[in-house]
Length: 211
Image 1 (spheres, rainbow, N blue to C red):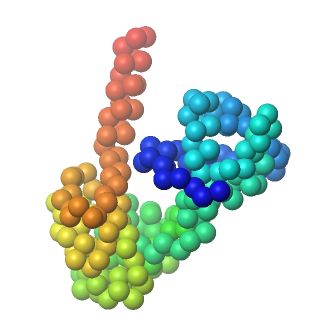
Image 2 (image 1 turned 60 degrees about the horizontal axis):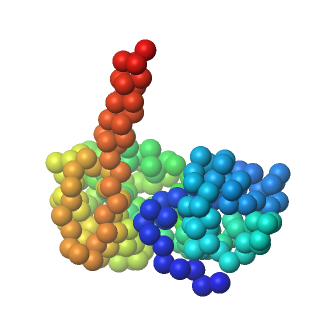
């Protein structure tokens, strides 16, 4: 089956399905969209549609062979491909990302980390030696990195973004709490930790008020 183009919303859900399937594959040789939806608290119709867009291996009344569905999801998400990335900002958050081993499950390899501070450049972060910004262009060229990760404070994020774009980066994973200005061909995916915290705090305050 040739996988279809899917929406951004579907793309956000597919890794959740993949993670769950990997966690149950040993005791669940086959799985249906309904079973997956119930386990994840998702809509049955939506899960069926999502799976149908990336896999043609579903069987009527039987569902999917779990291992086959895992392979289809991994292929669609590019988990078996190598996606080189560079990271700018080797502070606490940047170092946490550099130490995280789970990115390799999705094909992401952070090939180098950079920081504008002379005091930080040259130090170790995870298994990387933090490099000065002056080496960014050469590393991007040599590694073929088209993905950049920004973990600097908001005040320095646009400058980091501009430097990445000038080095040929076309996809940016932004952890800074600010809106970045980029050319039309560059995609920015924002991870706004403050927004998530606001939602959680609001939930807690409303539940507290209800009691």
